[in-house]
Image (cartoon, rainbow, N blue to C red):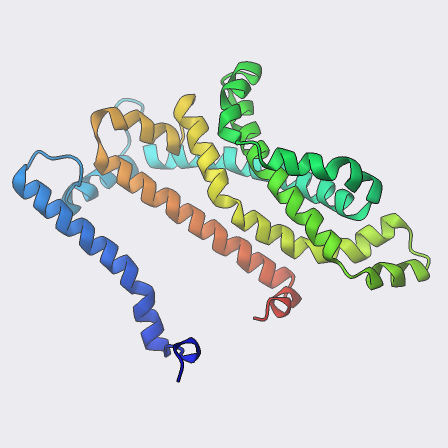
Length: 272
């Protein structure tokens, strides 16, 4: 049998799933043991005990200076910014993407412009945003919107353009107006794609959030990482990176479950 046709059994599949993570953990433990054996004061690769002490200090005990639980207050601040940015970007992408994909005049005038905006590196605009909008929350949220909305808009416009013309013609023969076609024909087709596009933009959105918080913030996950880096506090940085990754994974799973539950027929389109 060809390798392309061989599929692992359930147990083997779970083993293969865990193998890369186990290899990563093993590599870290070996590297940490070697470095600490050569220099017990080394801070680059903390031991598991040092990592646990760092987790306790940031997540399980209030900060002696401020009285805040650092990990949870930073998480709340970052998630509020992320939710605001992604929420605004999603609304813009849905409305503009449907309009550009459905209306030929808008497609002719804005299609190339949206494609152009999606190519602009958002981090290059960060100094401009801080100069024009100040160092508050508006600049951070705007960076997420600028970084995510054009790509999502372009993706949704392409999805609308892919809808079979026969569906539009059938709606027109039933005397449906443009507004009704958009609501009853186009919208159900693009909403699953919107959620999938949102999933794909979670990683970039976290990147823009952390970059903005690293430059100007008084709380947040990115702020804390760049604050403690000057002390080489890897026992704090590593848990924060792992926590950010976990938040992104959980958000990805939640959005996909939402898509599958609200639009179960989209699984059939994907061959699931």
